[in-house]
Image 1 (cartoon, rainbow, N blue to C red):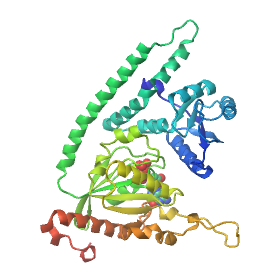
Image 2 (image 1 turned 90 degrees about the horizontal axis):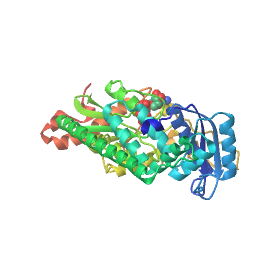
Image 3 (image 1 turned 60 degrees about the horizontal axis):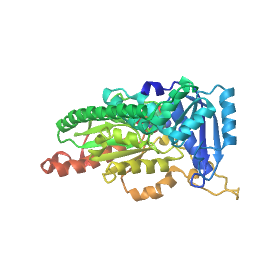
Length: 404
Ligand SMILES: Nc1nc2c(ncn2[C@@H]2O[C@H](COP(=O)(O)OP(=O)(O)OP(=O)(O)O)[C@@H](O)[C@H]2O)c(=O)[nH]1
Ligand SMILES: [Mg+2]
């Protein structure tokens, strides 16, 4: 079933809509991200199609005129895949495929596809597979229609309800099997986590591609895979790190994204246990990305979903080497100055100021401002450490008093 849905494509088009709640700028941002996702999955975007509408068309998502333009382009350029930014209903997907005569997928499916390409360990693979089957289950009716088409219609009875039911049952069985498998690996992992003793646990969290693994490698001298693609990391890496004489555990894990498929949050619950069981979070932000504030909001929302929003957190604004404020022309009275024109110093005086001293501006790539990073992490870990081992207090003096 999953093999059948496997996609190998290169040429793709993107389709999105502009609504009242999703203006042109937001839509562009979403499509930028969708294009990056497509690239991460191994695809190339030849064209984007957008349409202004009050609400998506229940049958074909976009209107029929626009759809005809997409169809012509698809035919002319031999496009293999049309990617829609929003989740399509099974019926919409079926209708659109019939018109475009190419593969039609949505953002959720694309993310699932990247995850399944990236999953290295059997644990990650099991989690992705579970998410894929859960995505598939409500769509089985649609899938059967593909078969119907392949068989050719005339004189052929379409698959009956019983066959769809059988198919659903197979998928449901598969889901419960995968859940069992995950449960048993979970047990092992939680024992392993338990064996790590009472060391303070620090977790790197953040939007995908912000530089978590780069920072992990820089701090812990480890060799985690880094790439300028979305979701480079799926599996969790844990390293013991010592700053001055204070040891703690640092973990790097999967990045977050907005509109993260619920199936994925659900199936990656155990991977996210590393975050849930952390004593301290380093929330890494790519401050050079123009949507970094939305990224923070998405990450906070997911942290909230896994009950980790209240943990002690240091906000780490990364990629300062790449940060560039947009030029502002003071003489042009028609434009207003916006946050895009802020310098880093100005940013620090905004809501960031309210975060107190738990804020850092670094470049993980150039190891810029790492002294301050070490100091802040040391102080925060120490604070947790001494409440856990009060008798150890004297071992870990204030950072200033320690010597390298
Ligand atoms: N300019 C600049 N690039 C950086 C910096 N830190 C990381 N990068 C680049 O950003 C890209 C993503 O880095 P990763 O460390 O893989 O990011 P990640 O957060 O682990 O990403 P996922 O695992 O996909 O969630 C890579 O191309 C890095 O080289 C930085 O401080 N400055
Ligand atoms: Mg990573």
